Image (tube, rainbow, N blue to C red; front, side, top):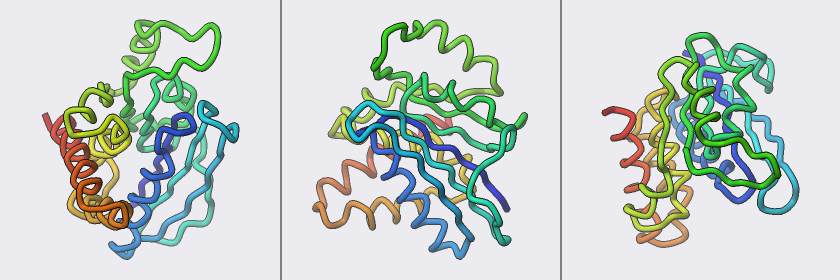
Length: 191
């Protein structure tokens, strides 16, 4: 098993929390893991990405090559487009449709959706709405993790355990909100 996953978004959207949950779950499964992160501006709104490489074999490089990503998991739709050259022909794009307009000339959502529609069965998610229904708009990153879970190669139950490990120190209510958000995303992807 080998999975190349690009996580994308902007600062403050929880990309590194998604990476931490996947990392924890992969390590608990005894899988090998390589991760490379590129942080954007040191304030909210800067582009953030993380390359995750997970395998049951030894991994020799941290970065994912062009055309080899099995999954682009993005919490911001324009950021999903930025990484399409990395997508493998059989790869999947899972992205939130909630834009973070942080520049002039931000394309229309119709243009973005048209480009995303050129990929193989993209999973397009109104993550903020599902997160609010789960109890907090801040949990939209966990909605996106849930929507991407079927394409990670890691069982959703292991990812839920990772959510528990990551958020456990913040109290039971925060854990439950994030697990509800995760499950809403899983349900959406399995529909």
